[in-house]
Image 1 (cartoon, helix red, strand yellow):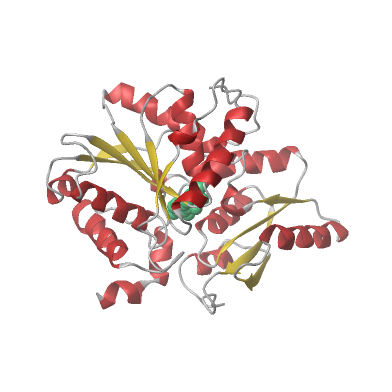
Image 2 (tube, rainbow, N blue to C red):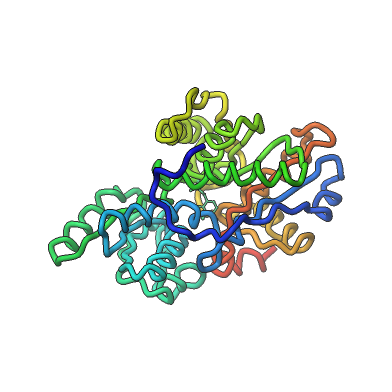
Length: 334
Ligand SMILES: *Cc1c(COP(=O)(O)O)cnc(C)c1O
């Protein structure tokens, strides 16, 4: 794949590791070998998947002469934290619009990412009701900032447009390069499926390098049908931007929605078990909203015998551990 046409900053500083998880593999019966791609270790304060996307989005903003970034997210958004982080690094002003998907969940003196927004010097935080039109909110903010002489640039939620998602098509190429070097034959890749850029980018990228490795998404909010359509549509846009000859097929997109529980960001027993298991067996910190629920899906699929015996499965760890500190009570209760 050719990424050279797209503006890009140099945030990655090399590949993130791919590691075997021997203890977790044993605990889950030893029939399926579990590997992890450590995107939780990406640069940018506290790491995580949005760095790969922001490398493209912020480059686009700078190329357009922006001096101010506006983005949106949930109250514990890792995307908002990393946008604030890279904005600070690039001397760009950063404004956040936060969606209170769970009423009363935003606290000015809150912990986790909430606290880090402030520490990273965001210029303003506006909290809006769950279900608000976030793009309209950001456009209104942009108009106000423009009127005050600023040059704002809007990054959509999760940086999951075709510009940001390019970062995960590139990640697929990175993974395939590592697997070839390690001579590690991965049979299946499991990723979280939220604002969809990670999932869509990975599917397109794996097609783009002709890997034949299936990529399945674990949903964190939506139902299977709705999420698969969103991933498919975004995947088509990325494939077109990259001029991939055959694009992607609808069958390439597979989502599991049985690990969402009562809703986005709301704890489930299987998430709590997964977070504890990864911490105690592999010393890997997951998060309650994304990687914890995705790992819960991975664990359940292994236990159910979804993967054939002796399969090698790669879990894409997208980060998010700062959110753990906003959920301490959840983990201590059990
Ligand atoms: C945003 C996020 C995801 C989901 O990625 P999308 O590209 O939005 O689907 C997964 N894990 C973490 C930690 C995130 O912050």
